[in-house]
Image 1 (cartoon, rainbow, N blue to C red):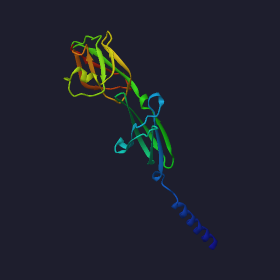
Image 2: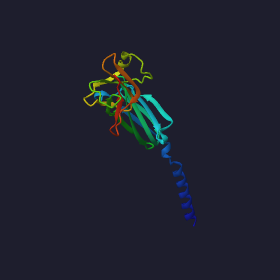
Image 3: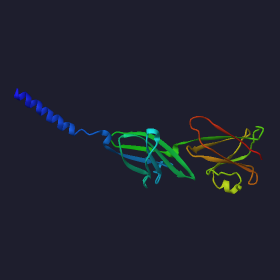
Image 4: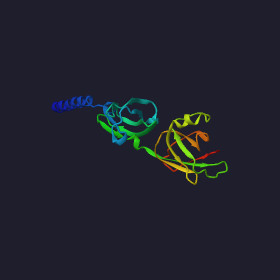
Length: 216
């Protein structure tokens, strides 16, 4: 009987010691390595990095930049996260985001290529009656001006891509960075131009054509 009691006591002691060593994984930190790539698949140094908790995507956890090797290192607790990365190039910002999960005690590496996050912008130019306006120059402007009364040069200095409308008044710009707002400048020449303050951006999920009226 005494032997049985001793065995039970010993089991309780061992179990107690074991329980003391149990660690909640959610309290264990994990190492995160983020590598951001730019043009020609080279590391994008000083790219902006923003990491948020996935819950509601609110409450910024980290806002920083990659190092000269295009890498960012962080130590985080277990959980679901959203990372947003932006690379500035040619007067525009290329953006990309990714959800990821960290398990306590397990390190994770992520590669992101914001310059691959591109799409097309389609514009259709007509007169007030809906008749197509062919052979009109169109420029995507990298700034959002609040007025349409500036000089032609003040707008065109921020031109990112440009082209000429076809016989149907249409034009498509390819490989445009998604997540960035452009405005539009339409013109026959530097004296006959029209600036549109309403921003336009890439719609990756479905085809979308922006219709604009040109009065010149």
